[in-house]
Each structure stands twice: as C-alpha cells, then as structure tokens.
Amino acid sequence: MHSLDYRANALLIFSVTALAFICAIPSFSDKFSNQNPSAEIQILNINRFKKQSYGNDEVSLTLDITADLQSLFTWNTKQVFAFVAAEYETPKNSLNQVSLWDVIIPDKEHAKFRIQTSNKYRFIDQGHNLRGKEFNLTLHWHVMPKTGKMFADKIVMPGYSLPDAYK
Amino acid sequence: MGWIGETVDSIKSIKIRQLLTQAVTLGMIVTSALIIWKAMMCVTGTESPVVVVLSGSMEPAFQRGDILFLRMTKDPIRTGEIVVFKIDGRDIPIVHRVIEVHERKTTGKVDVLTKGDNNDVDDIGLYADGQMWLHRHHIMGRAVGFLPYVGWVTIIMTEKPIIKYLLIGAMGLLVITSKD
Image (cartoon, rainbow over all chains, first blue to last red; front, side):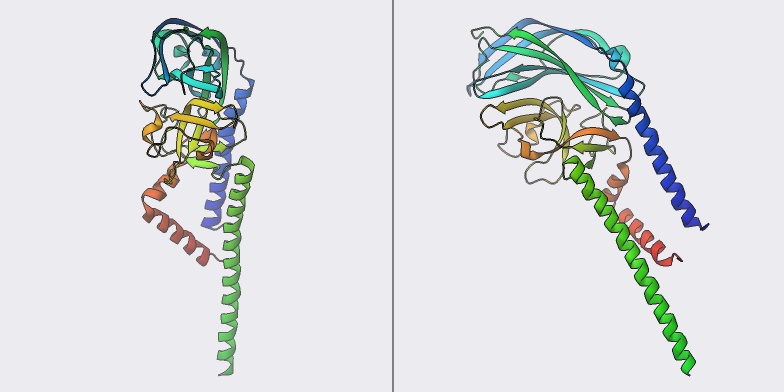
C-alpha cells in the first residue's frame, strides 16, 4: 500500500484530475461574461464585376468595416477570430456563404477597429447569378479560449446589393 | 523424494494462478479503456472524438501538440466552423476553418472550401486531384473545445516509436513484477 509505484500512481491520477478541473473552471466562468459586440460595414466601391472564362461571376469590392469586439475578451481568451462573409441565395443553392475578409485579434486593445480593405478572398459564385443580387454581410467571431470550450456568434447585416450589370 | 515433488507442485500452482489473475487484470484495464473510447465515439457522434494538432496551420489559436475535442451533429456546415476532415486516400486528419459554403436547394448537399488560419491560400492544393470542394462525408467533426500541450505525448510516440516500445515494455515489466 505504501510502495513506490502505488504512490506514484496515486500522485499521477490526482494531478491529472486536478489539472483537468483547473482547466474546466475558466471555461465555465466564460458563461457569465457580459457580451455586447457591435459592428457596421459599408461597401465603399465595387472594383470589378465580371464573368470569368469558366462562366462564374466574380466580384471585387472595397469594404469599410467598423467593429467593437472588446466585450468578448475575458481572462480566459487567447484570441478572437473575426471574419466577414457574404450570404446570398441563388436558384440552384439555398445558401451561399463566401468569406471575404478575416482577422486574428490577439488582445482587447486590437478588438476595436475600423479598416478599409478590398476583399482578402475571391468572391466567386457557382454560376453567373450575381447581377443585381441582394446579399447579407455577416460579421462572425470565434472566441478561442486558453483552455476549454470555444464559442462563436455573428451579427447579420442585410440590405446590400450588387449592380445590375457587369463592370 | 516425495516432498520435493509436493513443493514443486505447490510452487507451480501458485505461479499459474497469479499469472492468470494478472493477465485478466491487464485485460480488464485494456478493455475498459476501449469501452471509454467507444462510449466517447457514441456521445460525440464522430469516429475520432479527440485529435492532436499536427501542424502549425491554425496558429496562433492551435499549436502543434494541442488536442481538440470534436463533435459531429446533423446541423448544416457553415462558414467559420473549425472542422476536421480527411482527404480520400489519405490517413491524416486536417483541422482547418470553413471559409466558403454552397448548399444545394434540392438535395441539401454542400460544397465546402476550407483554409488554415495561418496559411496564405485556401486548401484547394490539399484536396485530391481535380477536387474543388469538400463534401459532408469528408468531414469527421467540428472542434468544440481544446486543451493545450497534452497532445505532445502522442506526437512523440508516433515520431519516435522507440519511446512507445520502451513505455509498453516498462508497463509490462511493472505488471509482471508487482506483488499483489
């Protein structure tokens, strides 16, 4: 009962259990944090709007993105991954979501920002349905903890539309 | 000369019983580990409820050696989710984020494009030749939680198999020599 391997075993089990418990607590405390993020996106310019050689529409636009995600940061937050996606419907697809821009926010100071940028990733449709298309722009965020459960949410901003003709 | 035979017999019989007990105990330990693993598979809905992060393509969120807890539900796949997928013909699961989704109206099937946060380009180069999209059956689960550093044990054991054999040998030795 008091041999070395019994003691080593008991110590190991206890420390692993204690560590697991310690890792679970900050994750649990995240449930009680008060979060009220806000964001606003404007389309400054449609730079290019054409049909590719394979027949798919492609858009290039410049966005003005203002966001305040500071309330998402708790002591257990490692980083917040934020991205803007365009969502729209086409005759063939009930839902299309295309990520246009993303950013990794490492701390609270960087979480309140305003940026003007063209889309980081190409906005290409499956087909040529984008002329005059109405779409939503959504700002998603994904909170990655130092340990434990990750959570994500989004703000949907409807009411954007593309021009009726190619440019 | 009779009592020598008796002692030899009694020694032999003790050893066998002890050996059998230890073998059964070892078997019980291995099978309970298996039961726990299978139960986790049932609860999380995926055939690999836990994976180890092998590359740096999702830094700084996930570093090499972290472990991710996965869960697979019937919910539709949407952008922003961190998914684990396997390419046809390759064994290694990849953990990246979904950046594009196209869902068919009629069938509900999805075309999915993924990208590692730390990579400059999307994953088209990783998919099989001629494959432009991932589909639901490629995706094994979504990452819902994580623990840092714990996965290094697995990485070391995979990359330096000597250590794995040493560990198993040491455990075997402990079981055989323990006086219970």
